[in-house]
Amino acid sequence: MTGSDDHAVEVHLDDLLETRGMTLVELADRVGVTVVNLSVLKNGRARAVRFSTLTRICQVLGCQPGDLLSVRPGG
Image (tube, rainbow, N blue to C red; front, side, top):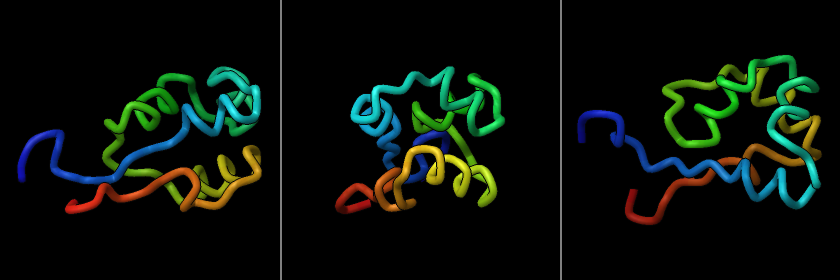
């Protein structure tokens, strides 16, 4: 695989935000990252995620990394 679709990781940030009644802007403020960076992650276009950012997202949302990320079957 090549290009921007060379991974099978899905990001479930929209679902987690909806469940918690939180906006992307609020999450960005609480995590300490830009809305643009979170949007890139949310839309599956991120090429990398710092463990410190992933940790903070999980702390703020009260979830585990596996709640936020999954691998598509057959991926």
